[in-house]
Length: 202
Image (cartoon, rainbow, N blue to C red):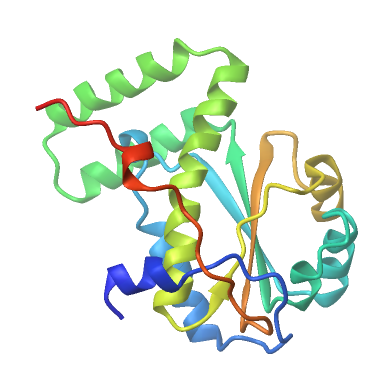
């Protein structure tokens, strides 16, 4: 499926069939998420991959009863992480292992640390959450490209999600994406005209 067709056909699925996706398809989608763009390449997020039915039902209760959560094959819960300094350490090793020049790596690491250390805790979390949305975009478009459906969800009780999933303090639930085989029909896609969205500075 061409990318244009993917974005035309993708929609926020409100009810799934309950059918389990093949593991290889889930793995393909997770790889698309792993390859997402992010600031500095640091990917300051962790994705909880939830397939346990009991957990999905609890998450549905924490999602104001929305049925797409419990009927999905999997629920991907995107969490921003505060452990960005550790990510920099890890990324430094990845760059060196890939054969990058030591001086170039050291300079880049210094830039990353300076940027991160200049932010308050609140700004660090907000910055991380913005990166999760880039990854989420890969998830929802990737799902359609692989032949199944998804539903990005901000309408969730994030504190309850954190408690249900037993997440540590340094992870911050940002957005949930149930994925699976749709059991509803998409409505016509409504979007603003381009005149409302684009301003040209020729």
